[in-house]
Image (cartoon, rainbow, N blue to C red):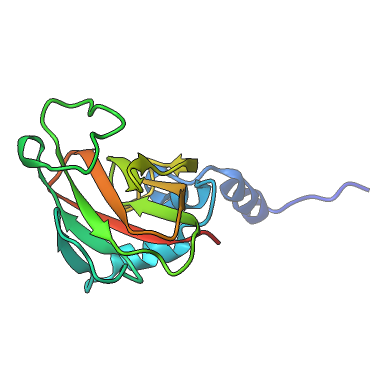
Length: 174
């Protein structure tokens, strides 16, 4: 015996299988597609009370959440060592922030709100990167990398940024 669907059932089934309109896609869906979780960073980056730091500063303590770095035009940006990668754009912003030694050596996750090159300089050399991930479809978070940070003070260098302010976080890897 064959079952018959009512017209309402057919319409409902047809609507259920239609793709959602492009505008209805969940905003920030790309945020779930990073190689590792950036959930804490997304919350920190959205906070309105982020600490503000000016490029060139030396911090007494590493911030426990995201902070905004006010960068300088390329011609005025100072670095502990030349950026490892030459910026692609002719006009860009950059700078460095000095940090005290972290509580313990290990792999740290450095996350940025927008595209920029990141160097961690420690003991006169570039820290070793152990991975990176990035997405252009995650509002407010552009890239995250993991680096080995030892138990001595270090310098965070940012170069090639398109704007004069960038939100950053540094935390131990999960």
